[in-house]
Image 1 (cartoon, rainbow, N blue to C red):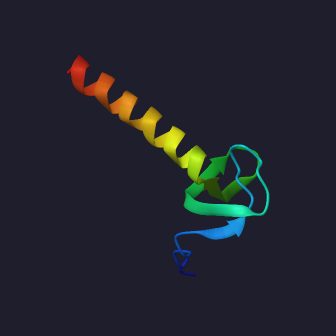
Image 2 (tube, rainbow, N blue to C red):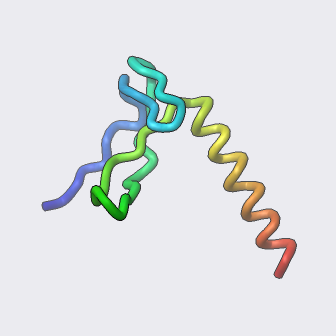
Length: 65
């Protein structure tokens, strides 16, 4: 079975802030030790916060090497 990439933005629920019926973007699968895999959806403000955290992580990693 091949998973198709969903459209960039759809109306749904943000898995990070629990916002409902808002534009969300599929960010990829998440994994749970107890329940397996699920799709991770996030709204624009949450995507921006995640991008900022990723940038901070990469900057720290690059600085420490």
